Amino acid sequence: MDEEYDVIVLGTGLKECILSGLLSVDGLKVLHMDRNDYYGGESSSLNLTQLWKRFRGSDTPQENLGAIREYNVDMIPKFIMANGTLVQTLIHTDVTKYLNFKAVDGSFVYKKGKIYKVPATDVEALKSPLMGLFEKRRARKFFIYVQDYDEKDPKSHEGLDLSKVTAREIISKYGLEDDTIDFIGHALALHNDDGYLDQPAMDFVMRIKLYAESLARFQGGSPYIYPLYGLGELPQAFARLSAVYGGTYMLNKPECKVEFDSSGKAIGVTSAGETAKCKKVVCDPSYLSDKVKKVGKVNRAVCIMSHPIPDTNDAHSVQIILPQKQLGRKSDMYLFCCSYAHNVAPKGKYIAFVSAEAETDSPEEELKPGIELLGPIDEIFYHSYDTYVPTNKQEEDNCFISGTYDATTHFESTVEDVLEMYTKITGKTLDLSVDLSAAKSSPSRPRASSSSRRSTSSSSGRSSPRPRSTASHSPSIHTERSSPRPSSYSSPPKTGRSTPRTAGYTPSPQTASHDSHSSENTSNDHGFFSRGRSSSSDDAYDFFRRRRRSSSDDEGMFSGFIDEIKDAIENYRTSKKDPVAAAAEVASTSGSIACVTQAKAFQDCLDENETDINKCQSLMDMWCKCKKSSKLTT
Image (cartoon, rainbow, N blue to C red):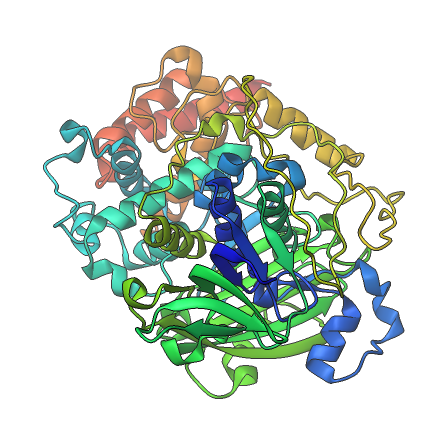
């Protein structure tokens, strides 16, 4: 250990392991130490015995919860944006070869006591009660602007300087309702409070673009992916990367004390009487508590259940966002759920988390609105931790301290912290300009053998750096949908986590049907962000298509859109006590699209007079009459 290193990294949390891997790839001599005897630090995944010991002070969990070693419970539960910076980092470093992922089934949002799916296809968007018909048409214009926006193309700015214009101002331009603003800001842009409304709109718009791009990436039910066996796999994967490029790892090293010279600069780390010298130190807040300040607290509930979250279409993996206004809070609350489909629990078990920035001293009461959405719970554990940010000046003491993980259920803020630290450490910006078209769903393959999660001895060997291949190579993210597994499925044996893991499984008929449909339809079908043309005969109206459809499109277009129009007209006419509602109801009973010419004329009228439906009265009557006649003759 008595050697000199360019960088010593303390703690094996995800942030520290990513930095260790990146710095090793850059050719720096890195020593990575941890006081614990396992990887992951605060972002580790625990088995049932470890979970019981941490929260109950006992190592004898209940037997009815299933096999102990099949649990991998994340302490910092987060999903990964499919087109976000973490995926770019995974591909850039080729760490993807150590991991397999599943697409997350769905993203939901809480509104007025109920939860609603954030649409992932244009059919879902069409039927979604999150917006009314005419509000959807107004939102369509906003989303078109967002998708077309290009910082380098002034024509796409429409006269707006997003570095000066606030999010509130750009939203008001499109006349969106408060509930729509709440949905877009929190469920799509993923802001955790309403402070963004009075900030420059650039970040707001780019967040929505990221959501749309991630939704299109793997064509799942959400823009998120999640690694098999839990998030504890991520730190280990980056640790392997560091070791391949010459990094040295030492676990179970007690009292890792940072040493400083007379000028206050870090010069090394001492543990068990041995000192390793270095030029820079990277660590989490627990190693240099005198150089950080507390900025908040996170409350979290960890729940083991025997069922999916109600009203989520029996999804095996979901995110639910509870916007602050819906709960009367200062910040959002988050629900995160995964299951045995991700190999984080025994078959039939689900792991759910409820997280929020602490606003009271009672986690039980504060998290109650989220917990009530879960249904029956087998076991629940409450967990609180303080959040810290560094206060030191890195250029003066050569110490680079990461911030604490926040309450959100995605990794974007985490990776932003990592990239900022990387720039400060190396003086350069990490180039993540990789071809993300390589990050597509592909057949899963056996994973490389995983090193044991726990280690009781120090690692002193160092591998020689692996040369980069000169052959053309496009790393990819290996994903599959986390649909219910067939009843014949049994989890693979896990003995010390040393056997190769295979992500593949035989899909159920429902899953196979969904996969077949997805393979036939390209990434043009993405909820509120649909833009392209689909060849599917059951394609619904595309909210974000600006061209006028040709007659060849009509039948596919009307199969879903007209039902939505008829519902809106029926509600409108009923509210006006107008008997024409009866005609609309008759039209809605037809099982096929007839009278296309009348329907097309009616839709064109709505396009031109979206705020005054009365101007389309005669066309609607003609269409309803035709539909009725068509039904009587069939």
